[in-house]
Length: 296
Image 1 (tube, rainbow, N blue to C red):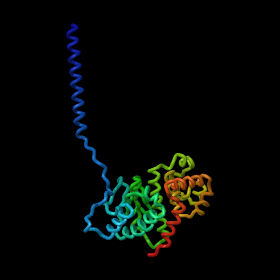
Image 2: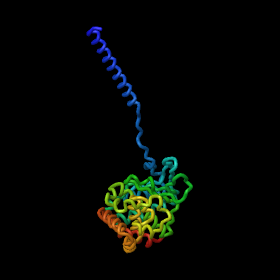
Image 3: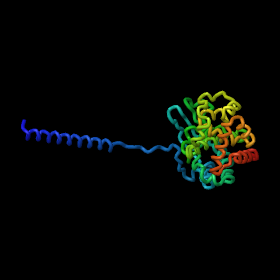
């Protein structure tokens, strides 16, 4: 075969190769053009209900939005999160009482009056109420999580257990407020982080799933305010906040004396909130006052 024929064959091979590449590129482009990406569905989007259809709760929610800038979400379709996790909207009467007493009376009003700087910068813009709890595996199981899966977005706070709300029990109301600030602590954690140094204090000493059955005294001795705080660093942080809402300063300091590491974390969490305009010891006094001085 002479040189001219060889060159001709090489040119044909190159030409067919280029045609093949162009065809592949064309097919690839056409495939990409057919791909449709759906926007994420917000299952808690605010329902735009006509004003002439409003009930007493809708009017109260509107007042709260005007006074505090927080949108209350209580109407939505019962959701299955992942096939084993469920949550449902609250009963109307329970939701009405919950918004009157907890959301406005014990949370937003005292927060704005006593901690204006913190209120302005850290208050979530939406509040979702869940009738039962966030259930795992079986919707009939009791004692499930209060806010799990709802509070990964720091602009939206979610709380469960509304259908079990009892405004006549100061003890239950105190627990409710402590849980609310526990859930909000997770949002603060997501927003700012709890800090590398915090996670180092009890590194290697967390219980994991073995926290069940441990007494508070044992947890304190091991460096945690609550047994559940020993589950993992994020719950350690949140239960520290929860404890400081539940108990006065003297009690917290006494608990912290049980373990030097617990004392260190207590001081870190207290300073963390002070920097943002919230004295957690003062918060306990405020919450305790509004709960035990309120008559129904």
